[in-house]
Length: 139
Image (cartoon, rainbow, N blue to C red; front, side, top):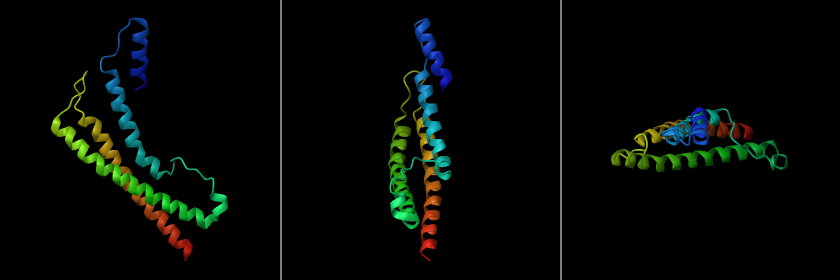
């Protein structure tokens, strides 16, 4: 991704040429990197969190907030995945291609769908864990 961008910028600034399909390749790589890394980010609990009220609600309140956040994130990921599938299928049926390299757009959707499904499963595991921790804390 970086190499294509550096070469593209270098060619544009020196000989007024560009890397044919450079933008398409960078876009595809970016989609793949972001969505395929999402499940690992979820499992490592490395998403951005804001802990402004943690001190005020105490340990029990923090557990409740974590469980609620996990459940809401699960719902959001499920809704996103539910909306991604029809869009990807439309792209497959229509057969759209990128303008420069003629890459079928379904190749952009595959990392989205695979990463989205894996993120959904990862978040399900986290949600189950957080709800169990909340239940255990109440006992």
